[in-house]
Image 1 (spheres, rainbow, N blue to C red):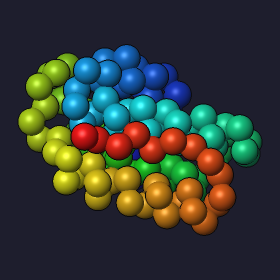
Image 2: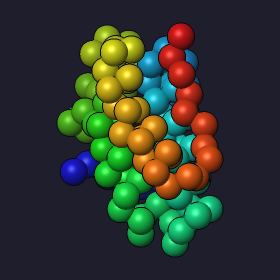
Image 3: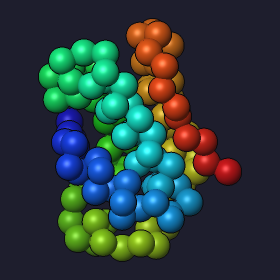
Image 4: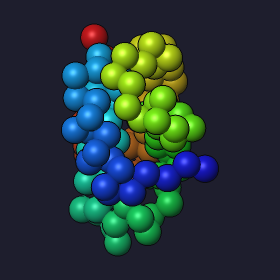
Amino acid sequence: MRFMNTYDIDDAVRRLNRHPVLGPAAQTLRNLRDAADANSDGWAYWPKPARAASRLMELIERDGTSRYRFDSVREDATVSEYGKAIAPIKAFRTRSKIAFDIVEVK
């Protein structure tokens, strides 16, 4: 399972903020991380939110190579794939009753 630490998430938000799919994906991941930090020992120590976000982290980073890290076009990230990636996050939010925003893609 892929794991993005706090620096990785903040860096993704900064780098991808203009991308129509990956910008909302990174912001949603940051919101989930912040909620985990506020409601537990923290993102790094509570595995349930990270497991729920595993597809989202995979969408953001893919295999972690520079092709995915530094290419701002990233046509491989689709609205459909984003919808599939946030489904487990929505389920986690419902089960845990922790409020955080999931950024929708238009």
